[in-house]
Amino acid sequence: MRYAVHDGSWHHKGTLPRKELGSDVYWLLRPGGPQLWVVADADLISEITHRWKDFPKPVIYYTQLQLFGENVLTAEGPLWQFHRKIIVRSFNPKNSSLVFTESQKQAKAMVRSWSKESTEKRESASSAITVDDLENSVTKLALHINSAAGFGHQMQWDGHGHDSTAAETSVASEVFALGSSAESAQTEDNMRKSPRRNDLLSNMTNSDGVPHSSDKGSLSDEEITSNVFIFTLAGHETTATTIQTALTLLALHPELQQEIHEELDMIYGGKSEGEGLAYETDYPKMRRLMTLMLKTLRVFPSISGILKWTDDKHQTAHYNGQPFDIPWDTSIVLDMVAVHRNPRYWGEDADVFRPSRWLMDETYGPPTNSVSHSKHQANLLCPRKGAFVVFSDGHRDCLGKGFAQAEFCAVIATLLKDCSIELVPPEGLYRPMLYGTPCVRTCGRPWTTGGI
Image (tube, rainbow, N blue to C red; front, side, top):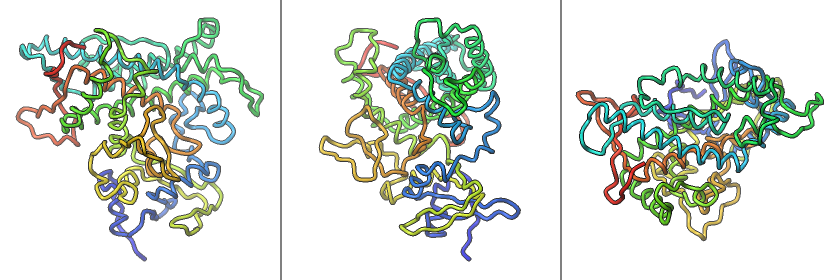
């Protein structure tokens, strides 16, 4: 029997099983507990995610997310289908346009907050602004965007973001507040009588009837509140983490900043002073910005894996063209980090941060068994199905994918329009980037004028 000590930490990136076991699929046998099956093979991942009835989500691990009842993340079977049919309508182009606009507004407010703090600290007469806690800032930013585009609730920056946001950026406290707002709106029937808005909560509340086995036509108050909770939790911290990581990578790769600046100069060219970006016409032009997001998520995904299981039935799946049996009550981890860095799908430089690998020319034709992850930007790489699963795959793919992509591109575009970013080493302290929040500085671009 071949065996290896399992390294459950993030940094092994799938090299341990490939080198020690010579396989992208392996078993972990735990004394006294259920066996665990780890998968980093793209074809097998695609098979599992598309056979959602055979390999359901192990909802037992998600009970803590049922704080307000069932929701689209915790439900399975017909109940999940019912939730999804209604909620998928909420993530429509009008909502994406709202996200795009609100993201620009909140990013500008964040920079003004940074500028005010810098002035109060009397850093210098320079236009450069040092941001000591990037994580806190972008977490607050994502929460503000999620609040406005998700629930129609506008939140303001107070100019003192680093010291006064602990309560505001608490997921639990904000979820309860938004949940109460949803319940109030339902009880008073205000939203159904008010002019139609395009935030997610309004879309859910005004949803047309959808057939359901229990003869329900719409979500109940509790179900709407529970989905509000999930949108806040899933859509706020994951996007914030991606924005923070991308900004840090931009600081480490000034040549990439230059390329994005050139793209933004083209997009903003011809616009009047203070004119913002339009979702319908400008978002499709953001090819390099989208590749920045996709590459960031490939190398540094927001989560490390996707959980599935076989429930109470034996299943058969295929690896390298061969069928094999999977026992009942087997937990399955789709190893996102490992498959995202697998040289079989991404080449020998799979660990290299190279966003240009996603840029294709006009002659590019997506290969068979591939999938697009950027429906608004043309001629971007379509990776093999199952090789890029940061938004999951199959029937339970991420409903908020378009929301997150529009938010990311609008935020980065706003921040880099007139600024560049560089890392600032903490004084008197060596702190590796991967083990702490980097300190960054925004500086005015020498070839542009104006401010945010």
